[in-house]
Amino acid sequence: MCGLKHIFAFILGFIFLSTHIVDSCTSVKKDLALGFTRLPFNKSYYKNHKPYNLPVEDRYSFVNGVHKLWVFSTDQPFARGSPTLPRSELFINGYKYSTGVWQFEAHVFVPHGTSGVSLMQVFGANPHATTLMVRVYNGNLYYYRNKVIYKDIYDKWFRLNVIHDVEGNSVKVYINGRLKFKGHGRGGTIHYFKCGVYAQDHDSFYMESRWKNIKIFNKSN
Image (tube, rainbow, N blue to C red; front, side, top):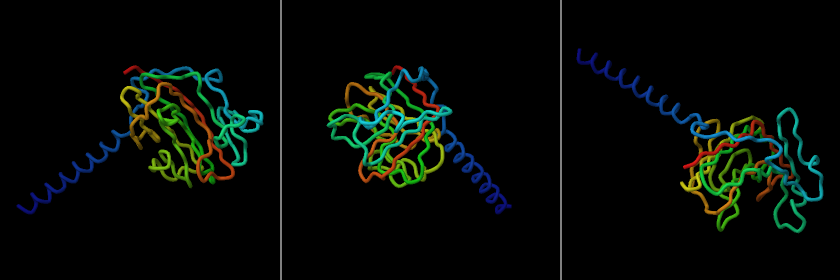
């Protein structure tokens, strides 16, 4: 009888532990739009940053709801005389902010071979230029060059959410609804989002990313 009690207690403990683990994992994935207001987003809210000597259509297309941006490592910068590396990005200039909590959401696709490139930025910081860069190196997603956020991203769509709390001095990165990175803000007075491809260190010859379902949200603290 004593042995049966121990076995029964073990089974109950196992069931409780298993349920706890599932519940914990499920709670990580949540409705990220809760409490936020979704803002309008269309062509009037962004403009293209691309090699200064090329027309937009040479490095950007928008077909069936998908923004495709690409650039070569041999391309010119976005402005004549700029010391920056080549880029093809959507500069979301319609939403510049200095207070509150702001969120960027989109589905992203990165083809195999694209590496050494920033996919998404929260621009504006002090003394740095950016609060956040989400980069890809050899198929893995990074916070700048320092921390792996998500592995094995090539050739598949995934959902990216970035939440920047200005007064709270925090920035969070979610992949497919799950928190993958949380860090501090980096100062600055004016911020905005950018996405596309912007060459960084050890950039591949050809860089490309595709974006759909881009959404912008905000809320007050």
